[in-house]
Amino acid sequence: MSDKQRLDTTRLQKIAQAYWESAALMAAVELEIFTAIAHGHDTIPTVAKAIGITERNAERILTVLAAMTLLSREGERFTNAPDVQRFLVKDGERYAGPWILFTKPRWTAFGELSDRLRRKEENKLGAYVDFSVDDARRYHAATYSIGMGAARLFSRSVDLTGRKKLLDLGGGSGAYSIVATKTYPGLKAIVLDLPPVTVVADEYISANGAADRVSTLPGDFTSTEFPGGVDVVVMASNLPQYEPDLIRLVVKKAFAALEPGGEMHLIGETLHDDRRGPLSAALWGLNEAVQGSTGLAHTEAEVKGYLQGAGFADVTVHPFVPGVLSRVTGRKPS
Image 1 (cartoon, helix red, strand yellow):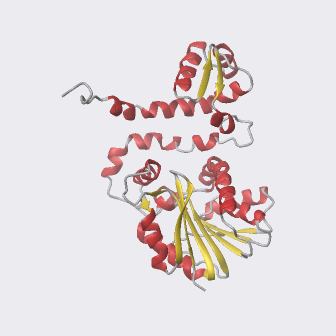
Image 2 (cartoon, rainbow, N blue to C red):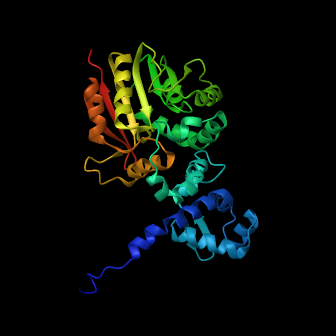
Image 3 (cartoon, one colour):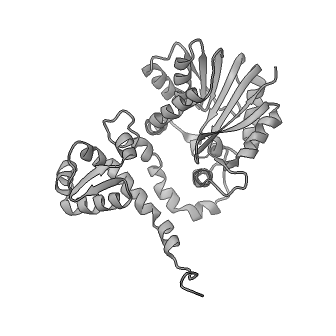
C-alpha cells in the first residue's frame, strides 16, 4: 500500500475528541469571552482580567477558540468571527448564548449513550413525561431567541394573507403564533402544548403584547381534541420526538380539524431520502434514545407520505434552514 493509500486514525480521533470543541465553545459563552472581546478586552491579559481567570488559562482558551475560527488573531489582538459577533455577544440584539448551552444538561447522558442504547423501556414523550413549569421555563429561556428567528423566517416564507385561525401544535413559547399574528392582521392563533408549557407560553405571549390574538390550549396533541374552524396548522421543531405512527395520527387529526382549502406546515429536522444525512437530523433522532422516547429521525419522503396518507394535496418539501430543517406543506382539498 502506498503512502497516499495508507489509512490512519486522524479522522477517528477528531470525531472522538469533538466534545472538547463543544466544551470550549460552551465555556466561552458561560465565561462571556466573546462579550469581553466585543467590548474591547481583546488581548490575553485584558480578557483574563475582564472574565476573572488566569492569563495562562486565558491563553489556553483563546488559542483554541482561534484555532476553531471562532476568533481571528492579529498579533496579540483577537476579534470575534462575524457569526460570533452577531449571536454570542451577550448584550447583542440577536444573542443566542442560551441556545448554545441548550444541550449541555444532556452532557452526562450522552456519555452514557451505549448504556442508553441497550435500554428497552421507552415512552412516547420520553423525558417530557414529568415536565414541570420550571423545566419549561428553563427550556424556553434557551430556545426562545432561536425560535423567534425561525418564526420570522416562517412568516417571510409563507403567505398567510386572509387566513383566520392558526393552530400551533407543540408551539412551546408561542413564537410562531406571536410573529404570524403580528405579521398578518386578522389572524388569530392557538398554541397547543403540554400544560406546564402553556403556563410559560402565556408569559411570552403577554410579554409580546399578543394576548389579544394568541391563546393557549393545554394538552397533548397526540390525544387532545383539536379545535375547529382552523385554516392553518403548524407543527415545528418536534418531529424527531415522535415515532411514525404518532406523526401519522397527528397529521390525520390536523387534516380533520382544517377547513376545506386549509394548509398544514410541518417543519422539522428531516433526513435525505437515502438516510445518509444530514448529520443534524440524524443526531436529533439519536437524542431520542438518550431521552427515552419512541421518536426517531424521519426522511423528507416519509413526511410527505404522512401528509399524503391523511388526504392532503399538493404536498411539497421546501428547504427551511438548509442542512437543518425542512418545511413540508400540504393543502386540504376544497
